[in-house]
Image 1 (cartoon, rainbow, N blue to C red):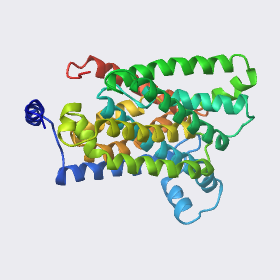
Image 2 (image 1 turned 180 degrees about the vertical axis):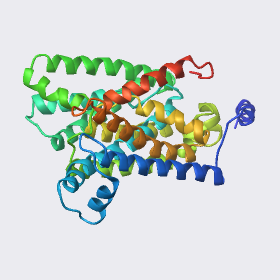
Image 3 (image 1 turned 90 degrees about the vertical axis):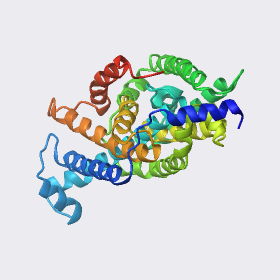
Image 4 (image 1 turned 135 degrees about the horizontal axis):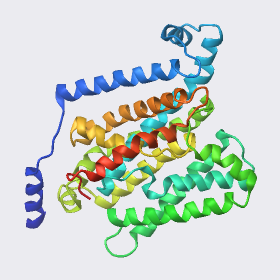
Length: 350
């Protein structure tokens, strides 16, 4: 380590970095787990048809009979499971995105992943005649992966490689390009537009256990990869030079972090369509509760993400009952005030 790196490391180590761990951290995680259980029960019980909590538990654990039990097992349980998986994926992906880009307003769509998935779904409908959610999943994954690779290749060109600023700029440009491509396809094909808009609105309604069965291996792989990168994300937060001085391979760390975020975003977008603001807001809430150590922030985000998705989904079910507002609309309504407050805070640094 060169002297300048030593001085930088010492300076950053003296900088205030709030950490919550031990018993306090464990107690907070337990509280968040209780909140998640309550959100799950709320999602199973509340909707256009109100079902008593006792009936919900009986339907799940004892195979209860009747119309209410059928609604719980066949409709709300798969919907709730997808909501939990999507919430975990978006929250962790957002945490990783903000870590590898050191950008406080980064979220899973920043690398063009969401728009790439949209292109995949549009191509599936318009070119390959795919008309089912289970069929969309694989095309969405493919589109997300190709878009993420393209963004990284573009950002890696020139001096300095794929820096956080270049990644953000390349992602913004790719988002604009892919959005134009999607618009070009759907505006010239009425049938594709009619079908695509139901997926593009972002919803967990109507999802089945088949969709969950297709995405869970990718969710598990993404979560395990992120868990292995937790210490590296802490080092990146101190700056690239400091991370190198601490023995981390910064380009590899950023590539693996981007890969994990891409896989997790692909999981969420493939299952539920684009859902904004969850990946932006949840990491900040998790850091406010747990401090800056990603070994605590990541599990907190994984618990908070599903809570936000499920609560937003329940609100969307009842606010204009018997009609439903898609979860993506509700997360945007809840997330916009948060984003405005975040931007106005003087403490937020680019």
